[in-house]
Amino acid sequence: MRIAVVTETFYPFIGGSSKRYLEVFSRIVEMGYSVHVYTVRLKPSWPEEETIRGIRVSRLALPWRGFITSDGFRSVWDVLKFTTEIILELMNDGDYDVIEANHCPIIPTWGSKLISLAKKVPLSVTFHEVWHSHWYYYVPYRILAPMGIILEKTLKHVPDVAVAVSRMTGERLNRYLGIGWDRIRIISNGVDLELYNGTNVDKDRYKIVYVGRLLPHKRVEMLLQAFKIVKEKVPEAKLEIIGDGPLRPKLERYSRTLNLRDVVFTGAIDDEKLAVSLKAAGIYVLPSMREGQSITTLEAMAAGTPQIVTDFVSNAAVELVKESGSGIVVRSSPRDLAEAIMKLMSSDELWTRLRDNGLRYVVNFTWERAAKEHLDVYQELIERRLKA
Image (cartoon, rainbow, N blue to C red; front, side, top):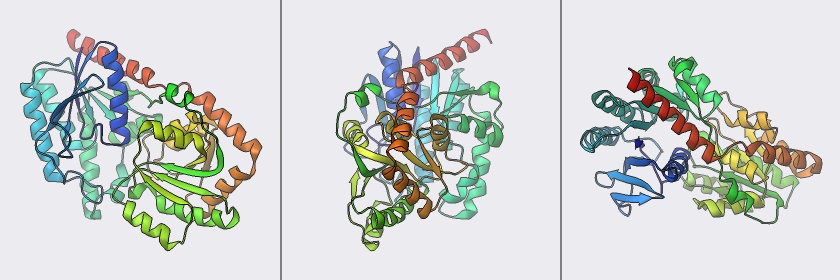
């Protein structure tokens, strides 16, 4: 089986979808299949062609420093250029048995559809989220949000199979995009359990950790506000913010404005260091209003670190925490977040029960399982195409 993968971001870019594709497709390569990723060359230091963990990676065009803008938005012009190059590359690069596309941004996904039709190759699209009304929070001008919602709805017509990373994402595909359940497959994210089981560090019950991109919808400023409340009651509390993004300078300034002590912004770190930080932490907090599933919530479970997440209808991390019983779901306010943090710090019985629940639950979420389930989808599509 030869698989072409279209995704705007891929390793070494740090993000949920790029991590999922690296972990899934490196394992598919280990199983003996061929994978070719087409992505954006975001930095001059990134080569145009290389092999990463057995995956052939082609980065298109000159370095596009403006592809991801300073506010985390995408340059529409650069997205169109990427889509054009995707069409040209896939038309000329030989034959594939299946095309896999990242649903975001939307226009390259439609480019993948054109190639799928032209070459009569089945198309699988992985959906990490369905934004719907959250377009109003994403676009720089609210007047553009209805266009985004309409454009997202057109994705109903794109995939032969829509892969959702969580049940919530699958339900939103069905409800808001109108994709029938006969075309939806749910393939959860995974965790490198071997890495977490092999990492041994002492726990600091008073250490709070956040992991993720520093973007508006992650609502890290609310975590800083909550930490200020916690710090007044629990002076030994510490906060580590792991990740990078356009809001980092603003959040660092805000932390100083609040006169917070014991807050560390680490920037992006590799998986080994992340495992150490998560295992050393006593509490993981994700105040995000929008998550397709949340790999880092699963990683916190694997690290034996109870989680606190905020209750939004589009936050699928809530689904994970409720199913596993591994954490606390709170209303989205600094006071509620702070009270949950202090509750975990003060109750050994609660903390231990949530930790143990998470460790039991997360063993079902491996990248090996996700890779096998992707292969099952591709094989189904190929067999269906052969019978047509």
